[in-house]
Structures are given as C-alpha cells and as structure tokens.
Image: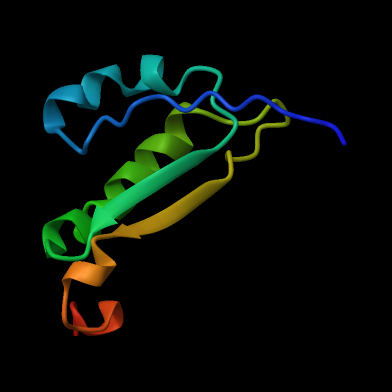
Length: 87
C-alpha cells in the first residue's frame, strides 16, 4: 500500500497581524483547512475573507484553486445546532 507524507503547518489563527504574511505561509500548499469556532459568529463571517485570500495567493500548477475544507470547531460545546447559530 502506497504511503504519503503530509506536512501541516501550524495555524495562523485568523489574526489580522498575519494578513501580510499569508503569501509566504501558503507557499507550495496543495490543500488547506479553514476552521471557524461555532461559539463565535465573527469567525464564521471571516471564512469568506480567508477563502478569497487563499484563492488569490495560491493555485495548483494548472492555475486552479487548491482544495479547501471548511471545518467547524467546538461543535460539541454549543447546545444549538450549528445551522441555527446564524439564523
């Protein structure tokens, strides 16, 4: 069975101070995770900003956007269904 090595960089945590460093951080990426905190709606609202930043700064060799997975964090710590948080 073939094996693969995955290098996961530590998160930039949505902190604005890292905004000007993202191009270097994204260098050679072939996939990404965008994580938001279900207990803080502002983190979900920032998802679009991070996705746009990612798409404008890194592409696959054929020019297409890199695959990106949206992950919800702290789902078990919130009594509401995730879909209900922003209704």
